[in-house]
Figure 1 (cartoon, one colour):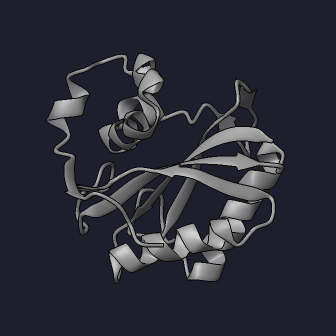
Figure 2 (cartoon, rainbow, N blue to C red; figure 1 turned 90 degrees about the vertical axis):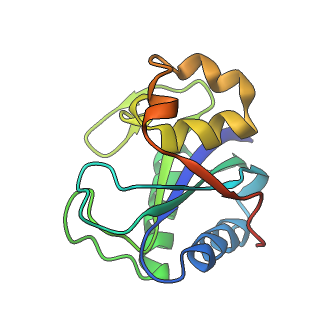
Figure 3 (tube, helix red, strand yellow; figure 1 turned 60 degrees about the vertical axis):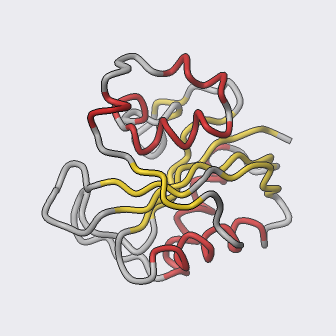
Length: 159
């Protein structure tokens, strides 16, 4: 099985419930085993800022999916949970991003691994480093970890 890391975020509706639903959907797949889940972090929106704050978690998984199949599974799960894509960086019921997949590097129109914005986003890096401290080497600018206002609000989701 390959090791992969996902980032899950939400800022519409019952945010904690949305995170729980996403984790349950991942766990329901016989091709995914969840091995670690970060605390829940809240952060103000990035990109399009006129929207509610996000809750974010990082998830470590083992998977038999290929990178592209994992992305397709995550996108299908988003749709199943009710995600509607209105515009880039807009409000979302659920967002599941593939951050890393083993040591694989992919750069296609459909999928980029490592995730192209990961190193710029404290709401991705802080939960990721919590569950995988060796990923601290991904931090290029330590100041962003403090400047982006990421707040730990809950030690764990109850999925």
